[in-house]
Length: 389
Image 1 (cartoon, rainbow, N blue to C red):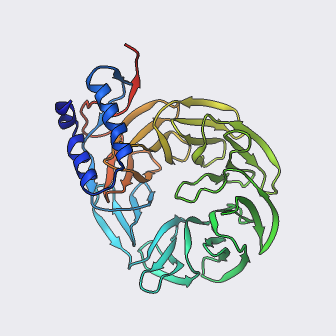
Image 2 (cartoon, helix red, strand yellow):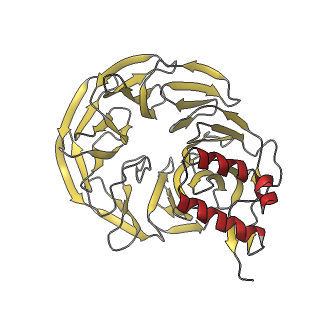
Image 3 (cartoon, rainbow, N blue to C red):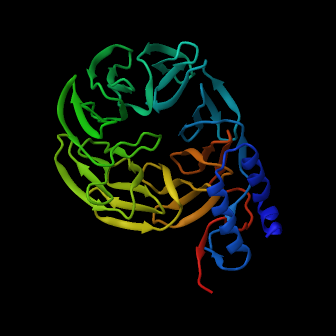
């Protein structure tokens, strides 16, 4: 078994995690049991090979935005890279985690460590801050934008809505921590979730509708809501009765719901709004906008992060587990390749043309791969399917 651990590079990882107290004793026992089964032949590989190579940078980021030419990273400041990993520009320090790309600029969170104050800023394509506003602390995923509305929800329960020019268009006081924010792309309203598990739609500072939804509060960095480009529907997670994904109009009328084998962990809608990609624990789904299942693939562990090309020809999935990894799927739901991460994945990105895939992890590493990978070799997988001997 020691030979297996050394070959796969797992032994050094386990030693580092034990010494740094980043792994619990319970988790360690589970991993050692799994690796024992691997070494004794009780478990066999699922057949998918991992790739090696790529570009690895020392950048810890929770937001990755890809264009065909550039990769934009938020890592305490905004950084523009080419896909070879060369830095083109860096903004001044922002301090926050969360950024939205609007084609002609970036709407980003800010945080000042010395004053413990949060806010938002708008940057141009050269990384220059055009305006900045203090709003108090903003939750991880409580920021979103359309071309006309830029919204941020604070931990003390205030929804701020700005114009691109930095004018405060309106605010709404919710009194309870705002968790996730979604702006309708037609700029007609802002939808948000909160700590008390309410799903609320606000238009020009007035509540359009509000209802409780079991399971809607995320409290982390997973986006479990998404709006269609034409604003005809939005989808969200629900645990009412069982795990499911619900589609609703912006007026709050349910259109359909579909059952899922486990809770929704990530979701993305294609650029034409005709398809929805959903990541769950151990599975990824593709549905039509009418809620019809196109395919389902049992893959990954906790599929918290999804990035897709405009028409979902390629789907990048960040799966977290004791050995996190990236999975690249085709539009037909086939596994094209996988890449390892030595710790929990924090963000996933992909270029619109599908030529590059990127992810970052908790250890502060950024991995960039070309698609298909330029160099690869067959490697043993850390993920296995049980077989009774």
